[in-house]
Image (tube, rainbow, N blue to C red; front, side, top):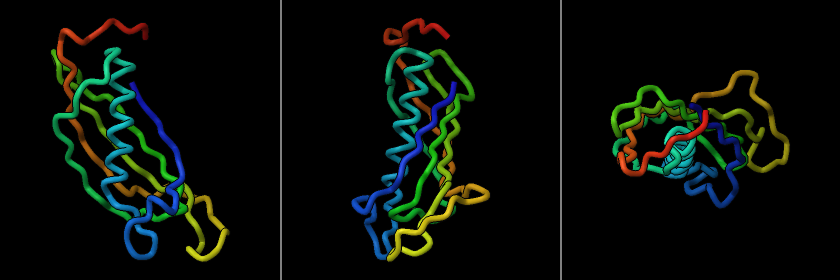
Length: 127
């Protein structure tokens, strides 16, 4: 099971000087990707139990990010999920409309998550 979310960080996402995006915004997107994996696997949104994230590169307004979540292991009710956020395109300068597609995506955030889907909420999903 995998999820992929790709979107552009808007000016509203820029929280700090230079249009720097708040890390919480990226974690929110990672949570959305985890939710999609749980729905694909269990037919239920489940609940996030833990998330351990490492911030490796800045994300700014105007950047395109790609969020991936991949189901690693499945327990009775727990699900371990690997997540990444990569920058795939960025503005040349914040003052201009020129942008570059990055030859190699830049790993901005990596995280491991544990989510729980209570047994009574698990539904058989056609895979």
